[in-house]
Image 1: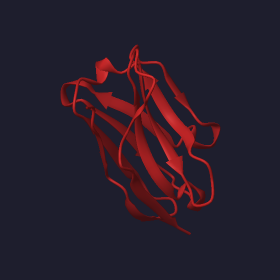
Image 2: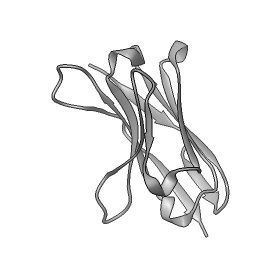
Image 3: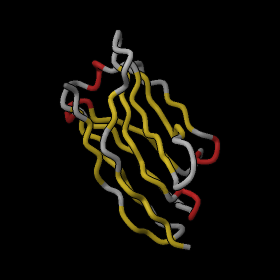
Image 4: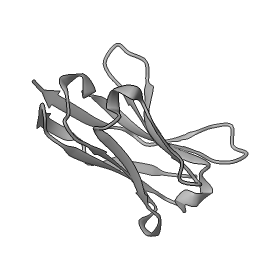
Length: 117
C-alpha cells in the first residue's frame, strides 16, 4: 500500500512563506502525476499544483507566481514552496499521487495551513 506523508504546515502571517513536503513510500517515478490539493472549510477540494513524471508542471491560476512545486527523486519527496501567502490560502493541503493502472488515487493525511491577516 502506497503511503504519502505530508509535513510543513502551520500558522503564518500574510505575506509569509511555508514549504510543504510529501514523502512517498515508493519511488515518485511510479506515479504518473503527483500534486498538491487543498480544501478550505465549506469548499470543495481543489488542485493547487501538480508535476508529471516527465516534469511538466501546472498551477492553479490564483497561486501562479507565488507557489512552486518541485521534487527530490532521491528522497522520493515532492515539495510545495508557498510564498506571499494570503488569508485565502488557508486550507488543509493534501498530497496526491496517481499510479498507472490504479483507478484509486493515493492521498496523504493532510496538513493544515493557516494564514493570518
